[in-house]
Length: 361
Ligand SMILES: Cc1ncc(COP(=O)(O)O)c(C=O)c1O
Image (cartoon, rainbow, N blue to C red; front, side, top):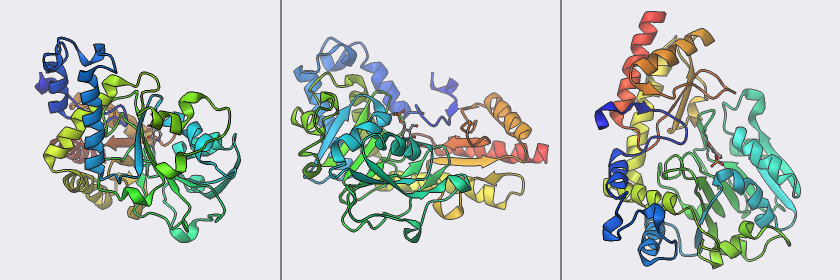
């Protein structure tokens, strides 16, 4: 079965480790002698609670999450958090947003419905090629939180430092680079991510939040948007996305068995460097993002013209690769090389890029 799989460079939902898919398949009809699939289990059953608790414990271990942080599993993906964050964390009616791409822009637009949003940086003028330096940030000191997006999936840029915010909590969207490298969770007030890239499959939003930040929220908000209610019910105020949580557990087991996030980071840098090194010496391809803030998850570049971009995508499919077309707002090519993309997959892409350049120069 595995021989027929393509190298899937999709930005999300994305390729998963084959061993995880095989385990899911093997356990599909009868999970560990329970006589049923995980899909069919009550979320309150002992079999499911074991999966749930082990997944949470493993996330805590792999990301090294301190005890004063709550882990919440929420339906609705990352976009739902764009609304939930201001409803819970905009304590004094003010928040600062750093716009480095389409998702941070959406998050800021949503927050504007609920209070005074100050844009501390907006990179839209330079086509989001750049991550601001500390000096380029215009941050307020009397703001409730500073929001940023750690990795810009569409543009292929990634923050390489944590900005100084003078004690103001940082709320970070890590949808497309969580679990790709070690992080210091304590640098952030809240971390959130949709699961469908490095964490597994769609349907689950993961929130890691400092518990002192969620003791109160705006009045009369939808109950499923109250972080304290979700935390107080251990993510089971209602039915959580049970199967997505189960897959997250298997993905975490895979990461742990590979040696954890240091190993992931090493492999991810190696894969990304292969592509960036080639792009940098080529006068055919042009990398999209500035050299000092390139993403190790999403590599974006263009061919000399849009016709060649289209030809590249078409021929790459015939060569056993899929989803290399860039996002419609940037064009060109985007190779999403999350944790589960193998080195062989990236080498296959590299060989194809070399051949395509030779044939079309
Ligand atoms: C960085 C980032 N934030 C937010 C989102 C939106 O996530 P969701 O589709 O889970 O709402 C995405 C989706 O690709 C993303 O890449």
